Amino acid sequence: MALSDKRRPTDFTLDDQIAAAIRGRLIEGKLPCAQAFVIARDLEVAPLVVGQHADALEIHLARCQLGLFGYPGEKKGWEMTDLAARPAPDGLEAAIRAAVDEDGHLACAALWEIAAQFEVPKMQVGYLADRMEIKITPCQLGAF
Image (cartoon, rainbow, N blue to C red; front, side):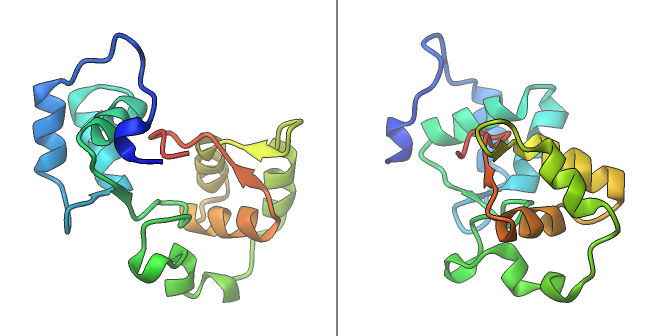
């Protein structure tokens, strides 16, 4: 699906300040996830609003903080790290499983909370959830 085809609220209007902030933080024409969250914090808007603006501007998101997409060569982020070799803290996988909803999905925001609770990188919980074949959705930025 083209970015311009993604659905936004019917009352969506492009905010020039948000658009300028996005354009100012692009790396190689893409908006890194972490930068989108900085924009959301700085402008006091929801991360989803920043994602919707990126979509409207036809700007792709990159470098998902969970490692799911947007890395060189279409690799998962953890493939560029040693996370596969890093042991998971006791209880981490159980906490991930416990957070899965009845449809087998787990929200990005829930994974961020689990990462904070266990004091591990967000990408480690993304890696474990992927390895556990858990469908991560929704994305806080609206990427999926």
